[in-house]
Length: 176
Image: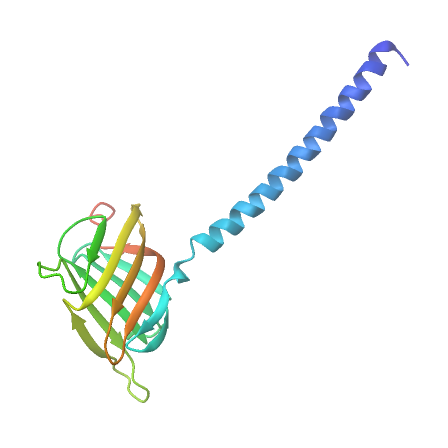
């Protein structure tokens, strides 16, 4: 064995070892990042009760044409339970406290199915509610944020969590 070979073998071994460690580390980091993304950014994170019935959000939609955010549960045309927020101003956060006497920039409509009925019942609120709605980010296709809504009464509504809503009627991405 020559001096060069004696020198290059340990160096080559170190390079192979470092490449193997780097590949394993990258694979582990990739798996951890994917797990974090799937746990942190699931749209199913809004839950609670609507009109006293358990609620776990299946879908969120933000309609840019009429400035509404809809959080719904159910796959049928009429949702099993849903909250629709009509936003009467543009902004990244909407905070409404019960008992506030100023004009409320948000109207909240809730819907729920009563057993044995196909058409959901509905109610709307402009006061008597606590709301903390925050939008974090927007792309051409989605808007993300968080909500905490509480409406007291005989059949309370109390939902909270994070959402990723699909954008509808985005004039920037529509052609024609």
